[in-house]
Length: 293
Image 1 (cartoon, helix red, strand yellow):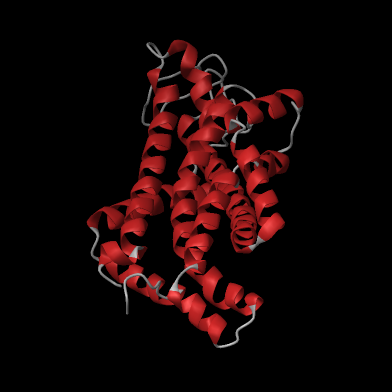
Image 2: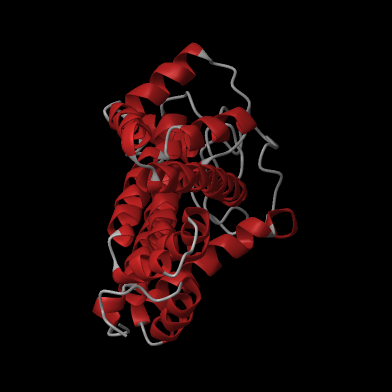
């Protein structure tokens, strides 16, 4: 098969799985994500304490790591390990669901914008350019500062609704490139309708960049959620998230380092794992690099 002709999505996925099996960095990243996600998934069964419990507000306040509290306690005498597991569970849930919303909207908009013609294509392109010109962080800060009691579901939806522009631009570019390839011209010459070409030949071949973008996007949303929660406009206490846990200990890092250090390490390791896995997927699923074409 000519390297300029994209392989079907299913064949690319199978080739990617074979390639990933031999990629040590991908295996390491996947293993690290499993090690992080499994305790979070089983949080009610594995946490040693109630993450909101304050058993002794004076005697256990900001205590260093010990046998009873392996990661110490915070200024409110709550167990840091229990809050870290529940906070990681919440941060992962927010990131995954928000990324799914972004990827779904971005893929749909980008595919339609790339496959449209004439005035419709120009209008969709201008709308996308306008949205991309708005700084996402400033927009989120403005929204959450104005809507201070936003529920968690609303928080996730807003993160998703403000994160699809980059995916849409990526998918639009892929669709524009695919439209000019020989296999689309062949399908057109054989009498295939535009809708059939779009559904059977165009969409399956944008799966690869979308999967990679989603994997990298999860790590980005984790950092974004942590930053907003640290500012006090994301997930609100006493609900634990990695961001507001860092905020709990940020005022006394020199004396009570464990309160902010362990949530910060969890963010770094999780984002690093998603980024490494995303890079590995890109190498695995890109035909020219992997030698599949």
